[in-house]
Amino acid sequence: MADVRDAEVTIVGGGAIGCAVAHVLAGAGYRDIQVLEQGELAGATSGQAAGLVGQVRASKERCLLAMASVAVYARIEQETGYPADWRQTGSVRIAATPQRAAEFQALAGVARSAGLEVEFLSTARLAELCPMLDSTRVTAALWCPTDGYLQPHSLVTAYARAARDQGVTFATHTTVTGLRIIGGAVRGVHTDRGTIATDMVINAAGPWAGAVAALAGQPLPIVPVRHEYFVTRAVAGWHSDLPVLRLPDIRLYARAEGPGLLCGGWEPNGHSLDPRGVSIGQALAVAPDWEVLSGFARDFATYAPDVTEAEVREVFRGFPAFSPDGRFIVGPVPGVRGLVMAAACNAHGVSGSAGLAGHVLDSLQPDPSPYVKSLSPSRYYPPTWDWESARAQAQSVYQDYYSLSPVGG
Image (cartoon, rainbow, N blue to C red; front, side, top):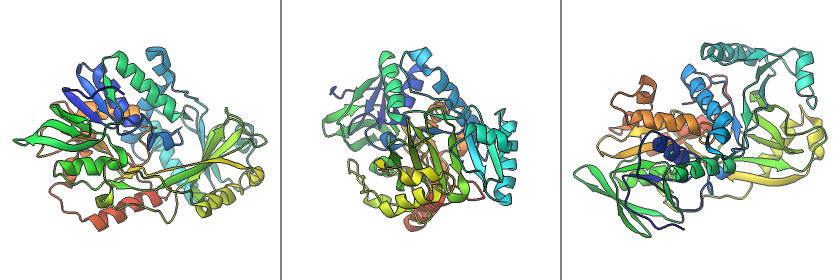
């Protein structure tokens, strides 16, 4: 456990976003960066992620962000020497209704406008790629060959090791207790291991990001919403080279985890936390909700009947942070010079970390891109929102993730 120290830039949060930002800023020439993490690196929300990386999105900007992330994952081991355990298996998006098939046509148009390769699969080609599926209910199948999945802990470790090679230091088991602000500017950070001087704090604290922002007197509607999935023991026909599956009509995603199955979904009746009751350092783990998880398994069995016999090996759950409008909160906070947000990733923190870190860097330039400007926390100031409505809206973003009107930042 390294000592805390004074630093020009202090990143709060040692998950995928915090470590990616450290790596990207160091690569851009920032030479005095420290990352503070209350536990172990990737020990909280990032470590609970399913690792799916999909590039088909409802907007061109989000497609491009995801494509930028995939480009990093494909070359990170070659460039840094550290693996992210990236598997470019491709992904198949399954439609069971004409309405969903029409949505896929629109998504394919957006993807192609961004230069992303996609195609609709014939029944025979779908059976070849996904022999474990019962395709009798399939109306359309949209294939993206450059999608895939990775191991979140490996990715965070790769970012952190590369950042260390670039001179970044990490102080784990260090909890932020306050921000030192003088004359409207960040001047330091108080921690349970001492106070440090710093000129910039980048808030990448995941579900605790709202609590960190509150230390500066800058409330932001960053809402932790529960998300969970299960991993089974070996299932006949499943192996690690199969494509990732997305089945929006039953609100599920699935991929192989070795010879087993990883399956998760977006609950129609989500469970969120009141941000005002979430304190820095507070454990957010919850017991598995077996009613929800068994529902996932039952619904997925309509497409893959063999899973009904599978034994659950492990359950993962966490509280990724959502925003009321389903868009990232990235960039400098108005009114506090040196306070920068990298938060509200809406369950895309791991998959979009490389692209999002690039957006943070862009937000620090004199003239950020129009898209990055649109992600600014300034949209929540002055506060015209209220906590109850913000929480309900953020939870709806989660619940409606696979709705026929896609959302996402």
